[in-house]
Length: 222
Image (cartoon, rainbow, N blue to C red; front, top):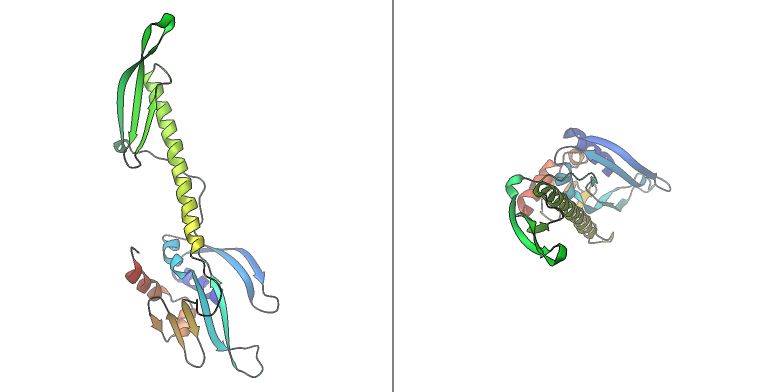
């Protein structure tokens, strides 16, 4: 039911969907499934759906027709692109050129061209005096800068993944942040924002944008 709900939400919002992994349940249903949803701001919207979810309904597998409570964990993670492209805005850097003295042949002091590059957004400072050519030193300094910026991007990705992993909750009673109740009444409720809807059929058919908007309005910037 949850898988269909998210597939319908993606369809309603014109996102592309690809199934990456599917493991059926031991008897019925789905044990786990991984789907990729591709589209503009898809992760920005869906990350709010990371949750431990409770479903209350009359079980179709119970001969007595009694109510049943089941739980599912939904985890949203970004698709990390390892092809990091580093572009340096010329307006973000400052070049400083000066000469420094060093020992030359026969103990004669020889002046060397020293180039200092400052990258203002990150505070990175690179000094280069590998050659006597100012052009070559600039190229070397830019190469070193891009290498350091690349490492910063990798670190940001690792920190983001660690943050998202930390948002996972244990599957236990009382930790759910969203409930879908079909019996004895009909209600979808987000326990974080208090937003709720009595039209469960429409919600399970992928009409989730009102819940997403309510979360964005309350928690934007937090």
